[in-house]
Length: 196
Image (cartoon, rainbow, N blue to C red; front, side):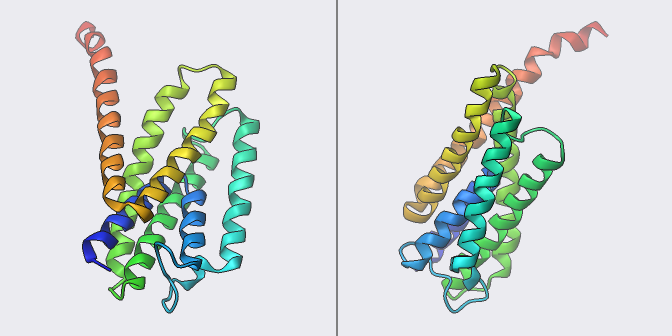
């Protein structure tokens, strides 16, 4: 497999895990069992396509979704659940990126480092954007954000695995939306700083 394609897949998949951890990991593992878009067999990351890992990811996805729906929205702000979701997303993103590199016969350690960075950046952008959106919504609409976040993570994960260059475009779009939102928020309160 072409090195550039594997790196693009890793970036996109790590970013998808940064948005939401379990559905992209479940998708990558399920597709690797075929193997359609990834193959972890024969590497130290073969567990990513094992039935036990896939079952654990599916159960974690269900538990997280039910918990967030009961709470009335996704875990986006500071707190134990938000920290756990963010940490798991960063960790899974790093492991999946490393697994893709190892599956292509390349050293895995750069994937761990790059996956940490990609997942952390995408997670921060998604939390920032969806956090601002959640602040403007009523309770029922805020609960629907759980589904939108999972859908975004699934779309990014599938794009990363099946059309890697498009995943990079989607990741850039997420960054642009986040930066524009931060600039808008900074400009909104700029006048208040003058009054001090």
